Image 1: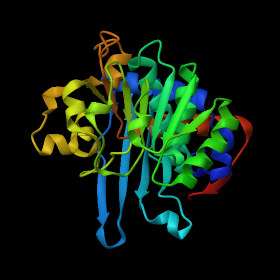
Image 2: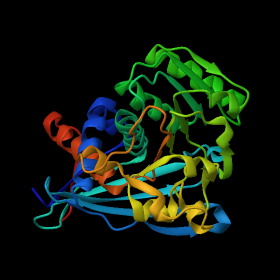
Image 3: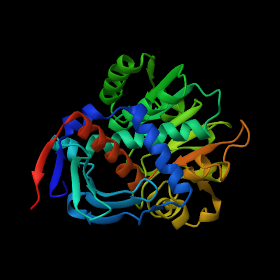
Length: 328
């Protein structure tokens, strides 16, 4: 009934979401994007400079699946000091027939999962087939789901990790060794971590922290941290050497890993190879040979949120979970 809205809290969303299912719906959402069968305006940002944070709205419509919604999400890097997550989110799903809201759910865990799933999808399509060593720069919540996503698509033999917090790195090691059953080796420097097949960067850095001379031929990089203007993690020389694959060209140009190099005219949009959806849809190719360096510039798309939220909503209906709220 469209006068009822299903409310799902964080625990319920967590119980309904698994990485395998999330990868499946995110991969299909990217494919639809590559086929130009989605409507997705760029993210809108509100900046709270005195609070060192921002608020973003992210609407999307997947035409073929006929699902639509919007995510409202913040990024406040100082929140952990206050006992709050850096990122918190809410997702609203709407009926495409009437526009009525049909579900509202916590989107914080969902955001982490769908971003981790995107990293897994990128590795599936862009990394070398024999890739087995994974390096992590940054060991927070996003590193956890990136590892869960990558673990779904390759057989990992070795993991290296470093962050600005030794305590954080050790906590990451302790939790993830239990969850995936693979040894994680803490490293003191980013350079040591870069000796890998797949590098994952999940920091809020506003200047390059991964240098080009540390990146060997054949490496695949999931550049996750840069998701707002002014953020960057990679030496622009890496981008000059690499096949750059983004989730969405307009959004990445504005707020992804490529945003600063483009604004400084070190590279241009023409240097972007393609979008990940085009690779999945078979319209473009990125990695041509094992020696290619590939970079996946992930900014996070509203289609990922809507597709994942719809999966959660459908499962909740099947399992009779959540609270039904009367709208009228």
